[in-house]
Image (cartoon, rainbow, N blue to C red; front, side, top):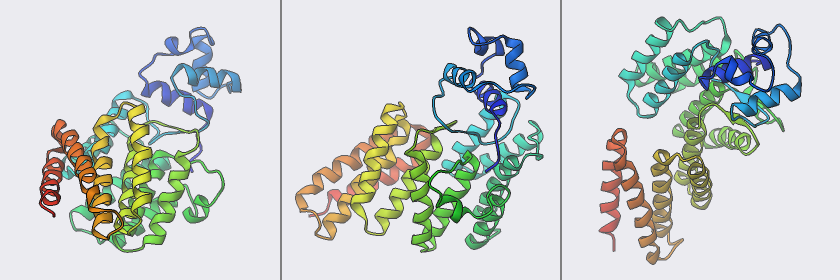
Length: 312
């Protein structure tokens, strides 16, 4: 992956947290010393680095960033772009990307910035039917090569460090592979990124983890591995509740209900379990309905609920 020095990690985390150098350095070091850390003039000791990161609420062993940027405004724009893509609001995503590249002058000097912009551009081209899914995968793999020579070999390592953008590129590749029926390849990617999440790592946004685990659960469920799919959902629900991320829960509850229904249809569970399935689907509907941006999903979930309620 692209290398991040301690200086860059301190600087970009501080900017993302909207903290001044004076606030961060208090009782740890002089503001002037912190400035020299961030400018790369001197390297902080491991103790100082840990103290500064803990002051910002980051206590993991690895730190990942989506892009190299200088302003909090750009960080906020990037977060909005991720949510626009998640909601499949392609017009808004295209508008935000152009704003990031032009108004906020995101430098293409850094490979992670080229990956970030290139990923979104590839997704938009695919959604506009300008390229095939196969071509989209090739473009995404080419973007990964800017920082990772061979991602299959890379993901096979016992320990690896990955940036948020690299993670999301792999997520898109795995999702497209799964849709194309390349289940083994897709699962290899999802499984190893999930292994990464199970370590004590820190990422700037919880959304990538949620998206990856939700889609991994989808892949397993659609291929008859219902119990594994349910287990991933239950683990992710516990994690999201701990993080106070209730707006992300509806998909996971729906997946649990859907998997139970499929198990009943295949005589892997008794019909009495349908009430449990209906409970999870109804809970998913209530959660989705609570958030206006998920209106489309809430309607689909309600339709599914009525469908299983009519089963005998």
